[in-house]
Length: 292
Image (cartoon, rainbow, N blue to C red; front, side, top):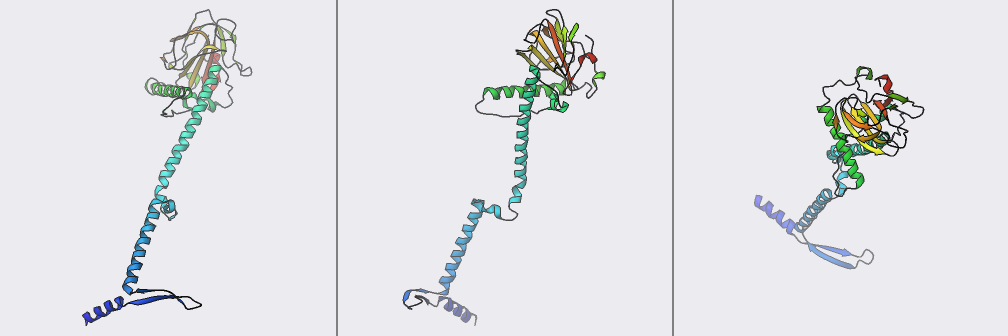
């Protein structure tokens, strides 16, 4: 009985049939094909396998796979992290540009304070690392600024870590940079953000606190100038020196001689020291905190 059933099935799928194609209007035979159920099953199976392969290749090797619900979620975290990194790099570039601009303005004596938070030299920018194949002068200068910023950070962590921080200026001790007569007082209205102290030629100029020299340069208006970053967000500026004894990146102690007072630059009419005191990005009157 079982053998008869199998024979009947085999006979059925092997029974030949003829597929005739006729013209609908004339009934003229256009073509005919002989086939059986086994041929039809085989052909359909091959078409399904080929179709499955094509769909698989389409999903694996083309962006179509992103249209599948839930597929894109696996890469969502990666895309989010990359986006955050790009945003961080952009902000770092903007902050670095702002930092250099502010520092150049400070060195040239062009800063007018509107917002104290806008001049926090200590925390304005973090180093931005890059490794270009070809480096322009601007890129080299930028790398120098980044190196100096890292040096400042290292000094604060190593040499200034035992000092008090976030103290008001009244609780800090300053060594007067020079002793002499004040010829011009501080005047924000006149954009004179420090005091001028008349001193004899070749007078030694001292650092008011321990700190790191972040700028030692010459400008046409202010001559040989020094800028020192101290702890507690204190910054000191020394202008019109005849000679600078320290360079950018040097660490100095309170009372250490950093320059020789003179008459360099255009905005001067005799040997004197132009001295500025900054605290948390705001110009302060040095006469309120030390005697000259």
